[in-house]
Length: 145
Image (cartoon, rainbow, N blue to C red; front, side):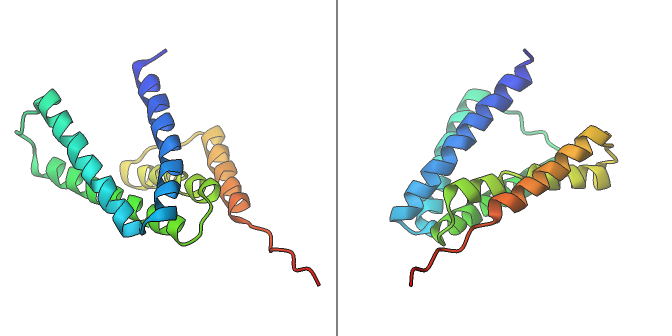
């Protein structure tokens, strides 16, 4: 199996567990406090990676700007996911719905990077959109007379 696939599966496991931990935290504290603890964890993890990886800093401006933008957008995505969970969203629905963010990446890659999709890949994207719609539908609570 390719090394990238192992890392992708590991990311899937980490993010799958994250959805539950986010819901548990927002059941007890505000989304803002949950997000701040998330940020502290990222700072600690970043320090470990910095010490371990010993990066060289001769980077082009576009690389730095893209990295900062990616980090900021990731943080905003995390914060809004905490807000969705705190606002009453079920973890099984919220996390499934926001986990479809790669569809936007696919669209942007086609538009901005000139990437092409096969018919099978386009069908997969359509199925994912249908799944998001079906997951977001909630039945109305039954009112007993």
